[in-house]
Image (cartoon, rainbow, N blue to C red; front, top):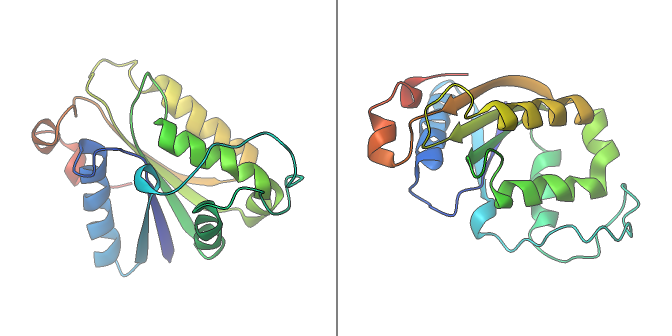
Amino acid sequence: MKILVIEGSPHKHGSSNLLAERFIDGAKDAGHEVSVFDAAHANLHPCLGCDACGMAGVCIQKDDMESLKDDIRHSDMMVFVTPLYYFGFSAQIKMVIDRFYSFNGELTSKGLKTALIAAAWNSDNETMEFLKNHYLKLCNYLNFKNQGMILGVGCGSPSMTERTKYPQKSL
């Protein structure tokens, strides 16, 4: 299977990317082909809401989304990786999701497998609820096939994350 991991942390060596690294290692060990798109450090711009694409055409913005769209088209699975920022996706991942608008129908018809990997400082039971619900609603809307979630609570720094169960957790 071809797996595309989309990282959305501005901290290249932060907790969510640490969890992603462990997932990637496991996926490769299982024989999957894995590629990574670093949304936090890519040349991406927010959706302008101009509707020039008509939800099925070319976006007027010329940035790294074109290569990401191509990567998504050739993947069997997409994994969203995000730190929890104010109980939701990071702005970098949200920007990618908003840009799905230009190929919304294509994504819906693909039935892409997806997963979510997230890391949060807090460790209370409600910490991940809004992110989880947003992700599941996105799966429902775009006909994504949720393969699981790793919702790492108490993962505020890489050293904290290493002491939790999440780096060894599988989907």
